[in-house]
Amino acid sequence: MKLTLPHFGLDEVEIDSDTLIEFPNGLPGFEDCKRFKLFHLEDNSALFWLQSIDDPLVVFSLTDPGLLHIFYEMALTDEELSTLQVGADDELQIAVVLAQQAENNITLQSAVHANAKSPIIINVSKRIALQKLLYGSEFSARTFQIPQGIQQESAPLPHCLNEVARMRPVAGDSLRSIA
Image (tube, rainbow, N blue to C red; front, side):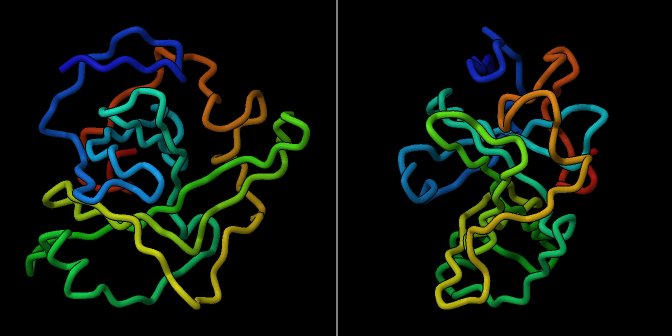
């Protein structure tokens, strides 16, 4: 399958359709985007890009919440378990969406936000995911001190690919094992 990545300046990238992640309900605000591909730089296992297959202009920056000292204890509802098709041996991973703050249409390098209140839950065994909204939790979309390995100093997220040739599709089964 060929994919266009306009955010990264690539006309076409060949990807394996078996490695796509499906969001059966889409994402809030992006309900029509149901199929995604996870990418990262070969030498940076802390920052990932979740690229929509259904709309090439939609891409999200993700990271492991543990790198930001965000630790979740949550229960999935029966509906969420059903959506994720969770089986006894399935592995679930959690990721948070990153965004940079802008003032007057200028991106601020130091103001990176992690949406801790709406983590992405991925059933890596079945490649199915959803975004869980944590109502009434202590988490919020707030600014975190982003570790050096996550924030690139040369350009804003998600446009921080200096050497596009070093970007590769994620073929592994989890955010930690793909690096």
